[in-house]
Image (cartoon, rainbow, N blue to C red; front, side, top):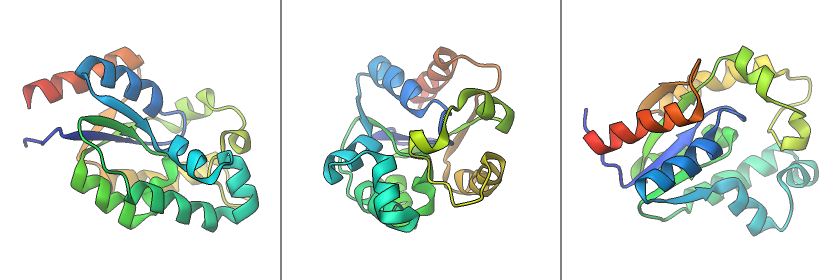
Length: 170
């Protein structure tokens, strides 16, 4: 299957490496890098955790969907927040303007990488564990992904090399 690599959107769990891989990939390809969480914070004038605290989870998800739905760019690696997959119109838009790559990480690796979920601004419903969140989100990441990159046992550099080769070979 051939993809148009106009833009690349990286989806996956928090701490899956979307920002790290995204910045490195953008540098290697000569693309721009866009972190949509930063767009949300800029638009709202608040940190993600403050938006979640003030607006509640549903309010935050609505803002996140609106911001991602309005992204217009070319030759850019886009790294949205891990909860972007809850916004169907945002995901439809991202699929229209980019190739969507799911950075797949095991739940065990995720638990090792993550610190304080609330401090990171992770969209987590009351009483939900990281494993619950993982099991809820993985089918959505798989649904929207054009390509899945398995990260287990790979460094960020190896993931970038794998993606770069895909882009360069079409």
